[in-house]
Image 1 (cartoon, rainbow, N blue to C red):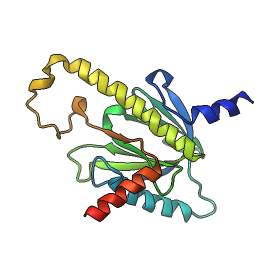
Image 2: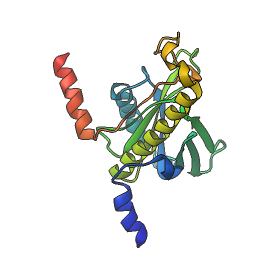
Image 3: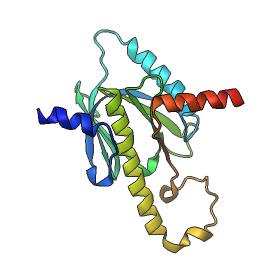
Image 4: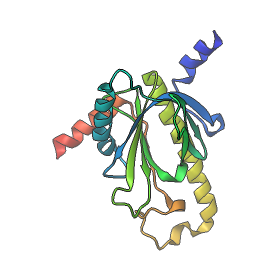
Length: 200
């Protein structure tokens, strides 16, 4: 009974670093190449493609049920069912560049992961479907808390060098990873996208 109570309040709001790690029950939709590091414009089309494939799966194929754990180290995924030969893997926090709750499929959480920079397609979108829109939102907040902690650690590690660094701010280095998380609601993102389109 208590869990019902907590889920309504918990799923509403912010997640603090102290709350981590948090494990979410999700279904893994898959991954697609992304054309950029940050922004819903780089997750939207891949999510459409992946959801399209998922909707047309034959009856004997199902999306894997997973435990997705968000911690200060990053995102760890474990496939619970069906049994798979590779059933768990991790995305370290310094390889995740963007996370967002999708604006069309509001139960879908998508994130962009940076693979090998020398690869012709270094960015990948990974998408997960949650039980509810509120859970997708909480997952977004959990990743935001992990990002905040990571950025604090990077700042502490770099100490006073911050002001005089020679590297351009847009290069990706393991300790200088830039990242963004979109905490707007799907409606707010939609409104923002429409504004951009009218300007363009």
